[in-house]
Image (cartoon, helix red, strand yellow):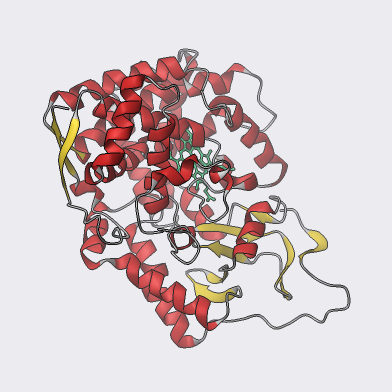
Length: 450
Ligand code: HEM
């Protein structure tokens, strides 16, 4: 852990520190009941789709949003200390505070906050997100190299496109596309991209990884011994595939150059396998939105037909679907130094939360926040706008953002090429604010002739 004696923030010399703004009892209970507990029940690492379906019937995000709006109004936008699962956390509401959250370096605001670490360490204990200090920087370097972070076109883009085309072919041969089939196809594509074609049919490995991710929902408190043994078994299998994986795979790319000492280059594969599989819910929600917005669908299909390089319109649709339905709705960090927020000092070790799912839909800050308007992502620098952060920003920004957008837009393109989405379940009422959550596992899309 890196500690600094400097105070980070907006302190003015000689200004006496002010007491923190703390949520009252009623506010805390409301926050726990409408935000913290629902996040835990839905699954912090692996979504429980039955719960997601229930939340969509109850419109659960509306309860959480109402709580956050009330807290912001009551405390004038100041950061609020509120009780969470394992202690207090500082919730940020103000635009400037949020911009600073993204701008602080990792030795001030670190990724490995306790609850996040407890959970993710079950299935990726040596992943970059679970690391800190110099080791984190080394692991991030391995990640960035394999993922070609920051490059719009991954060097193995052609091979990945081939894999996506092959895995999508059976999907578009039918007239109905549902989530279970898309999820199976994406999981196969993920194993092929990370470990090579030999891993495509490895249902046993898939089962082990699913078990570990489900266990991560219990934040390391359930069956720790059994989880460690299962992780070791999965790790051995992954190393076996990686040993002769073809050069375009992420595992081979991670092994291609010498890694800094103490860094397990294959330790990142667990996160990569999961992150690519996560494109399945992203894709099906993007297609659901396009089915409900025929004009946007026409634009996307025109771009595909024209063979526009990089599919910018479709990528904007994926980004917009992520803004509305983020994969990481709560960004959590822990301070590694004393920090000062609006004249209030908080000790090192304070957990800081940006409920980005709430902020990036907030109509007071984001025009048309509850509407599907992909064009907003075509504006210059939209991708760096701190009001909207589906991939986060700054030092903790997702290094797989371009790869995720590439794969998601390629899968969307495979479905839309030669097909029109003519009907979809659930039906979205585009005349009203879009729901805060959709029953992803229940999405069914009808594919018709263009
Ligand atoms: C396409 C959808 C994706 C979304 C929406 C997404 C989103 C995010 C977000 C929000 C974070 C920061 C998490 C936090 O602050 O706790 C993150 C981190 C990360 N993502 Fe992604 N991601 C995606 C795809 C990918 C892909 C495809 C990969 C790799 C194959 C990947 C690899 C990573 C890694 C390694 C980190 C940890 C970064 C660090 O600790 O510095 N992501 N992602």
